[in-house]
Image (cartoon, rainbow, N blue to C red; front, side):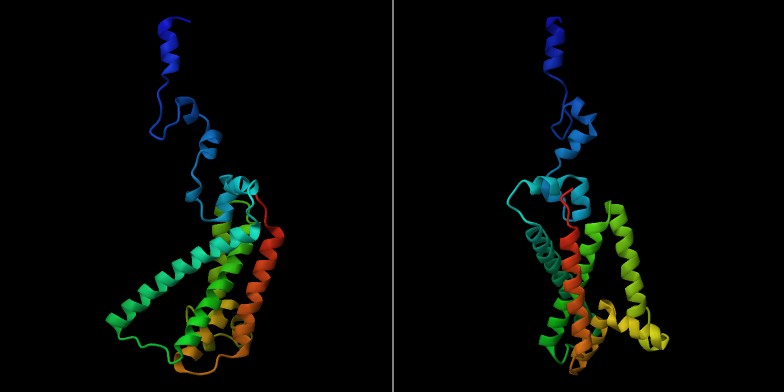
Length: 209
C-alpha cells in the first residue's frame, strides 16, 4: 500500500451523522447508533433495539410501562387543556358541574385506553402493525361508544355492548359529571376492568426484543 493509499484509507470521508462511508452502507450499524430518546413506543423500541439495550440495565418492564404512561398522560392533559381553553374562549363552553369527578373520569379513561394500547404494543410484531391494530380497535370502540352519533341511535344490543367498552363508558361518565349526576358504577367498572386487563396482558406478553 502506497503512502497516498494509506492516507486515503485513514481519512475515510464521514457522513453528516458522524459515520464513515462503511457505516453508511451498513443499516445494522446505523440502527444501533440511533439515540434512545427518539423512541417513545415499545413496538418501535423492539425494532430499533432500544428495549434490548434496556434489558441489560436494572430497568424492569413495569418501570418502562409506567414511564410511558406518565409521559402519555402529560401529553393528554396538555392537549385536553388547550382544546378546552379554545372551547371556552371561542364557543362559550361551560365548565362541568362536578369538576372533580370530570377530572377523575378523564384520568380513568386515559389510563384504560393506554392499557389497551399496551396490549397492542406488546403483541404487535412491527410498528406498522401496532398502528393498524390500534386504529382499527379505536374506531371500532368509538363507533359503538357514540363518537359518530348518540348511542341511543344504535340497536339496543349494540348500544349495550358499546356502553361497557371503555370509550362508551367514558362518554357516559363524562356526560353524567358534566351535568352533575352520579356516574354509574358500570362506567367505573368498565374503565377499571380495562386497566387491570391491559396491564396484566401487557406484562405477561412483554418482551425486550
